[in-house]
Image (cartoon, rainbow, N blue to C red; front, top):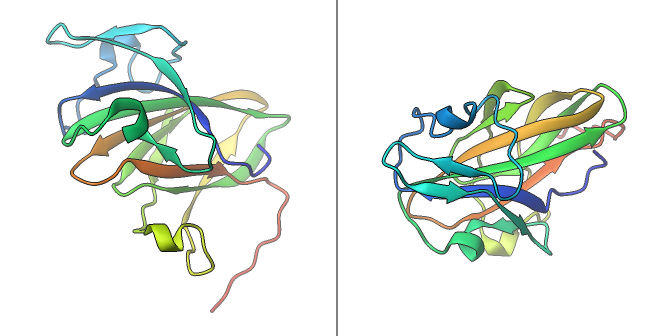
Amino acid sequence: VDGSFVREWLLLGPIPSTDMETDFLADAGGEANVRPKEGDEVTLKDGTRLTWIRARSDRRRFDFEKVFGIHPWSITYAYCELSSERRVETDLRANLLAPTPLWLNGKRVGDVPTQFFNSENWLGLNTVLPVLPITLEAGRNSLLLKRKQENHGGDFIFQPLAPERVHVDFH
């Protein structure tokens, strides 16, 4: 955790649904406990088999549509592990267009804050993204996002901030 953007994820989906309450990973340990590896399979209740795939972005922005294509009204899971040398309290800066539940080390810590953005203002001077406070344990920390694709794009950023940083508040 050094303030860089997460550019590599394990992804599962798309699952044709907009039901954010259903745990589609129940048979694989559940959303709180899943620790997937690349190539692991998940069987949905309707018999559909999905495989966790590794995807990487060369940019700070990650685009689900480049991986899965356009699938409006669907659910996609994204998993990564964050390494920390020691237990730290820090913040997570992210931008998704819809509220996105976040599980960290088996605990739901809340929804990733959302804020509308456009391509002309992508992390520009006029963009101040909200943060979500998180606590990372020493070692590897598992992190799962459950993303709902409605009828808009699939871009997002995800940046765990370095614990040692300057804080500035503007009023």
